[in-house]
Amino acid sequence: MTNTFPASAPLPPPAAAVELTGRTALVTGGGSGIGRACVLALAQAGAAVHVVDRDAESAKEVAEIAGAVAHVADLADPDAVDLLPAEVDVLVNNAGLQHVAPITDFPLERFELIQKVMVTAPFLLMRRILPHMQSGGWGRVVNVSSVHGLRASAYKSAYVAAKHALEGLSKVAAIEGAPHGVTSNCVNPGYVRTPLVEGQVRDQAAVHGISEADVVSDILLARSPMKRLIEAEEVAAAVVWLCGPYSGHLTGASLPLDGGWTAG
Image (cartoon, rainbow, N blue to C red; front, side, top):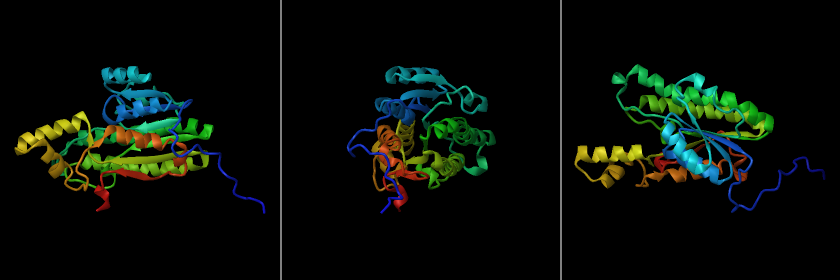
Protein backbone atom coordinates (compact mmCIF):
# COMPACT_ATOMS: atom_id res chain seq x y z
CA MET A 1 0.00 0.00 0.00
CA THR A 2 1.31 3.43 -0.92
CA ASN A 3 1.84 5.78 2.00
CA THR A 4 0.05 8.95 0.98
CA PHE A 5 1.00 10.66 4.25
CA PRO A 6 4.82 10.78 4.33
CA ALA A 7 6.43 11.08 7.74
CA SER A 8 7.91 14.31 8.96
CA ALA A 9 11.65 14.67 9.38
CA PRO A 10 13.08 12.54 12.23
CA LEU A 11 12.72 14.18 15.63
CA PRO A 12 15.32 14.21 18.41
CA PRO A 13 14.65 12.34 21.66
CA PRO A 14 11.94 14.06 23.74
CA ALA A 15 14.40 14.97 26.49
CA ALA A 16 16.73 16.81 24.12
CA ALA A 17 17.09 20.54 24.67
CA VAL A 18 15.72 22.95 22.07
CA GLU A 19 18.52 23.68 19.60
CA LEU A 20 18.34 27.05 17.84
CA THR A 21 21.87 27.34 16.52
CA GLY A 22 21.76 29.08 13.17
CA ARG A 23 18.46 30.81 13.98
CA THR A 24 18.03 34.53 14.61
CA ALA A 25 15.64 35.80 17.29
CA LEU A 26 14.29 39.24 18.11
CA VAL A 27 12.77 40.04 21.51
CA THR A 28 10.94 43.28 22.22
CA GLY A 29 11.00 44.66 25.72
CA GLY A 30 14.07 42.51 26.15
CA GLY A 31 15.85 44.66 28.68
CA SER A 32 14.05 43.44 31.79
CA GLY A 33 11.50 41.03 33.22
CA ILE A 34 10.06 38.40 30.91
CA GLY A 35 11.84 39.83 27.90
CA ARG A 36 15.24 39.62 29.56
CA ALA A 37 14.58 36.01 30.56
CA CYS A 38 13.60 35.21 26.96
CA VAL A 39 16.77 36.79 25.59
CA LEU A 40 18.94 34.71 27.93
CA ALA A 41 17.02 31.48 27.26
CA LEU A 42 17.07 31.90 23.47
CA ALA A 43 20.78 32.71 23.53
CA GLN A 44 21.42 29.64 25.67
CA ALA A 45 19.57 27.59 23.04
CA GLY A 46 22.05 28.84 20.46
CA ALA A 47 20.09 31.59 18.73
CA ALA A 48 21.63 34.87 17.66
CA VAL A 49 19.46 37.33 19.56
CA HIS A 50 18.47 40.95 18.96
CA VAL A 51 17.35 42.79 22.09
CA VAL A 52 14.89 45.65 21.54
CA ASP A 53 14.13 48.03 24.39
CA ARG A 54 13.55 51.75 24.86
CA ASP A 55 15.94 51.71 27.83
CA ALA A 56 19.43 51.81 26.33
CA GLU A 57 21.23 50.83 29.52
CA SER A 58 19.05 47.75 30.15
CA ALA A 59 19.26 46.63 26.53
CA LYS A 60 23.05 46.98 26.50
CA GLU A 61 23.43 45.12 29.81
CA VAL A 62 21.45 42.04 28.82
CA ALA A 63 23.00 42.06 25.34
CA GLU A 64 26.47 41.88 26.88
CA ILE A 65 25.47 38.97 29.09
CA ALA A 66 23.78 37.04 26.28
CA GLY A 67 26.21 37.91 23.50
CA ALA A 68 23.29 39.60 21.75
CA VAL A 69 22.82 42.78 19.73
CA ALA A 70 21.06 45.70 21.41
CA HIS A 71 18.62 48.01 19.63
CA VAL A 72 17.19 51.09 21.33
CA ALA A 73 13.70 51.75 19.98
CA ASP A 74 10.45 53.29 21.12
CA LEU A 75 7.84 50.95 19.67
CA ALA A 76 5.15 53.60 20.03
CA ASP A 77 6.80 55.14 16.94
CA PRO A 78 5.88 53.10 13.83
CA ASP A 79 9.00 54.30 12.02
CA ALA A 80 11.18 52.66 14.69
CA VAL A 81 10.17 49.21 13.43
CA ASP A 82 11.66 49.92 10.01
CA LEU A 83 15.11 50.22 11.61
CA LEU A 84 14.99 46.74 13.17
CA PRO A 85 16.25 43.53 11.50
CA ALA A 86 13.89 41.83 9.05
CA GLU A 87 15.81 38.55 8.65
CA VAL A 88 14.49 37.00 11.85
CA ASP A 89 13.41 33.40 12.46
CA VAL A 90 11.97 33.79 15.98
CA LEU A 91 9.94 36.87 16.88
CA VAL A 92 8.97 37.38 20.53
CA ASN A 93 6.50 40.23 20.95
CA ASN A 94 6.88 41.04 24.62
CA ALA A 95 7.01 44.83 25.07
CA GLY A 96 4.16 46.28 27.07
CA LEU A 97 3.01 48.75 29.67
CA GLN A 98 0.13 49.16 32.08
CA HIS A 99 -2.19 51.87 33.35
CA VAL A 100 -4.86 51.30 35.96
CA ALA A 101 -7.98 53.48 36.06
CA PRO A 102 -11.73 53.10 35.57
CA ILE A 103 -12.95 53.56 32.01
CA THR A 104 -14.69 56.80 32.98
CA ASP A 105 -11.35 58.31 34.06
CA PHE A 106 -9.00 56.57 31.62
CA PRO A 107 -6.83 59.08 29.70
CA LEU A 108 -7.30 58.73 25.94
CA GLU A 109 -3.63 59.35 25.20
CA ARG A 110 -2.64 56.54 27.58
CA PHE A 111 -5.17 54.16 26.03
CA GLU A 112 -3.83 54.93 22.55
CA LEU A 113 -0.20 54.55 23.63
CA ILE A 114 -0.87 51.08 25.03
CA GLN A 115 -2.50 50.01 21.75
CA LYS A 116 0.45 51.36 19.75
CA VAL A 117 3.03 49.45 21.75
CA MET A 118 1.10 46.23 22.35
CA VAL A 119 -0.95 45.83 19.14
CA THR A 120 0.32 48.04 16.33
CA ALA A 121 4.02 47.31 16.96
CA PRO A 122 3.54 43.51 16.93
CA PHE A 123 1.55 43.87 13.70
CA LEU A 124 4.26 45.98 12.08
CA LEU A 125 6.97 43.57 13.22
CA MET A 126 5.06 40.60 11.81
CA ARG A 127 4.52 42.44 8.54
CA ARG A 128 8.25 43.16 8.36
CA ILE A 129 9.55 39.75 9.43
CA LEU A 130 7.03 37.19 8.12
CA PRO A 131 8.29 37.36 4.50
CA HIS A 132 11.69 36.09 5.66
CA MET A 133 10.13 33.31 7.72
CA GLN A 134 7.81 32.27 4.92
CA SER A 135 10.53 32.24 2.28
CA GLY A 136 12.71 30.09 4.54
CA GLY A 137 9.96 27.60 5.29
CA TRP A 138 10.33 27.97 9.06
CA GLY A 139 9.45 30.58 11.64
CA ARG A 140 8.16 31.04 15.17
CA VAL A 141 6.09 33.99 16.36
CA VAL A 142 5.56 33.96 20.11
CA ASN A 143 3.37 36.67 21.55
CA VAL A 144 3.69 37.28 25.27
CA SER A 145 0.05 37.86 26.06
CA SER A 146 -1.41 37.51 29.54
CA VAL A 147 -4.18 35.87 31.49
CA HIS A 148 -5.82 39.21 30.66
CA GLY A 149 -5.82 38.15 27.02
CA LEU A 150 -8.35 35.51 28.11
CA ARG A 151 -10.05 37.16 31.09
CA ALA A 152 -10.85 40.71 32.13
CA SER A 153 -10.21 42.68 35.29
CA ALA A 154 -11.65 46.01 36.32
CA TYR A 155 -9.64 49.21 35.74
CA LYS A 156 -7.39 47.68 33.06
CA SER A 157 -9.40 48.51 29.93
CA ALA A 158 -6.44 49.43 27.71
CA TYR A 159 -4.30 46.48 28.75
CA VAL A 160 -7.14 43.95 28.47
CA ALA A 161 -8.22 45.36 25.09
CA ALA A 162 -4.63 45.22 23.79
CA LYS A 163 -4.02 41.67 24.96
CA HIS A 164 -7.31 40.47 23.45
CA ALA A 165 -6.31 42.15 20.17
CA LEU A 166 -2.90 40.46 20.30
CA GLU A 167 -4.63 37.10 20.70
CA GLY A 168 -6.63 37.70 17.52
CA LEU A 169 -3.61 38.94 15.61
CA SER A 170 -1.68 35.84 16.67
CA LYS A 171 -4.41 33.55 15.35
CA VAL A 172 -4.49 35.29 11.97
CA ALA A 173 -0.71 34.96 11.71
CA ALA A 174 -1.06 31.26 12.54
CA ILE A 175 -3.53 30.67 9.72
CA GLU A 176 -1.52 32.65 7.18
CA GLY A 177 1.79 31.14 8.28
CA ALA A 178 0.73 27.48 8.38
CA PRO A 179 1.38 26.73 4.68
CA HIS A 180 4.92 28.09 5.09
CA GLY A 181 6.03 26.26 8.22
CA VAL A 182 5.49 29.32 10.41
CA THR A 183 3.68 29.00 13.73
CA SER A 184 2.20 31.76 15.88
CA ASN A 185 1.17 31.28 19.49
CA CYS A 186 0.54 33.22 22.68
CA VAL A 187 1.81 32.50 26.15
CA ASN A 188 -0.52 33.76 28.86
CA PRO A 189 1.13 34.24 32.23
CA GLY A 190 -0.61 35.45 35.33
CA TYR A 191 1.32 37.68 37.70
CA VAL A 192 5.06 37.28 37.08
CA ARG A 193 7.78 38.08 39.61
CA THR A 194 9.31 41.16 38.04
CA PRO A 195 10.65 44.36 39.63
CA LEU A 196 7.42 46.12 38.59
CA VAL A 197 5.18 43.56 40.30
CA GLU A 198 7.39 43.39 43.38
CA GLY A 199 7.06 47.17 43.68
CA GLN A 200 3.28 46.89 43.42
CA VAL A 201 3.30 44.25 46.17
CA ARG A 202 5.30 46.50 48.50
CA ASP A 203 3.03 49.47 47.80
CA GLN A 204 -0.17 47.50 48.41
CA ALA A 205 1.23 45.99 51.61
CA ALA A 206 1.85 49.48 52.92
CA VAL A 207 -1.57 50.79 51.82
CA HIS A 208 -3.53 47.87 53.29
CA GLY A 209 -1.34 47.29 56.34
CA ILE A 210 -0.82 43.62 55.55
CA SER A 211 2.18 41.44 54.74
CA GLU A 212 3.61 41.18 51.24
CA ALA A 213 2.77 37.46 51.26
CA ASP A 214 -0.88 38.30 51.97
CA VAL A 215 -0.91 40.83 49.13
CA VAL A 216 0.26 38.12 46.73
CA SER A 217 -2.17 35.43 47.90
CA ASP A 218 -5.24 37.50 48.79
CA ILE A 219 -5.12 40.38 46.29
CA LEU A 220 -3.02 39.64 43.22
CA LEU A 221 -3.75 35.90 43.14
CA ALA A 222 -7.27 35.98 44.54
CA ARG A 223 -8.57 34.18 41.43
CA SER A 224 -5.62 31.80 41.06
CA PRO A 225 -5.64 28.37 42.76
CA MET A 226 -1.83 28.49 42.88
CA LYS A 227 -0.76 31.14 45.35
CA ARG A 228 2.66 32.02 44.04
CA LEU A 229 4.02 34.37 41.42
CA ILE A 230 5.33 32.74 38.27
CA GLU A 231 9.01 33.29 37.58
CA ALA A 232 10.11 35.02 34.39
CA GLU A 233 12.34 32.05 33.62
CA GLU A 234 9.28 29.77 33.55
CA VAL A 235 7.66 31.96 30.92
CA ALA A 236 10.90 32.03 28.92
CA ALA A 237 11.10 28.23 29.05
CA ALA A 238 7.64 28.02 27.48
CA VAL A 239 8.66 30.51 24.80
CA VAL A 240 11.72 28.45 23.89
CA TRP A 241 9.69 25.21 23.92
CA LEU A 242 7.33 26.76 21.35
CA CYS A 243 10.39 27.08 19.08
CA GLY A 244 11.33 23.43 19.41
CA PRO A 245 10.71 20.33 17.28
CA TYR A 246 7.84 18.98 19.38
CA SER A 247 5.70 22.09 19.07
CA GLY A 248 5.64 22.34 15.28
CA HIS A 249 1.97 21.34 15.10
CA LEU A 250 0.91 23.78 17.81
CA THR A 251 -0.22 27.05 16.27
CA GLY A 252 -2.95 29.58 16.85
CA ALA A 253 -3.01 28.55 20.50
CA SER A 254 -2.91 30.35 23.83
CA LEU A 255 -0.80 28.65 26.48
CA PRO A 256 -2.02 29.65 29.96
CA LEU A 257 0.70 29.90 32.60
CA ASP A 258 -1.73 31.23 35.15
CA GLY A 259 -1.76 28.81 38.08
CA GLY A 260 -5.24 27.65 37.17
CA TRP A 261 -6.79 31.15 36.98
CA THR A 262 -8.64 30.38 33.73
CA ALA A 263 -9.67 26.87 34.87
CA GLY A 264 -12.43 28.26 37.06
